[in-house]
Length: 94
Image (tube, rainbow, N blue to C red):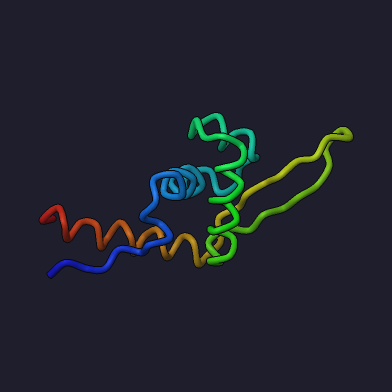
């Protein structure tokens, strides 16, 4: 009856990042940091875990001589997020 929940997405901060990216497709690190109220260090670690799982792509570049990190949700990330939401609904009785 209850479906397994993806342990990568079952972290509050990683789920928040994925929830933001599912709606905007891609976002700068600073945007994600501001929206999640996470520290830069913690957010960096969680982004790396999402990247290692193949759920997001991370693009590092320079903009006006400043480093810029952009996170973009991948097709695999979208599918994992949708499955996570579907499986979570089994716990809610929907």
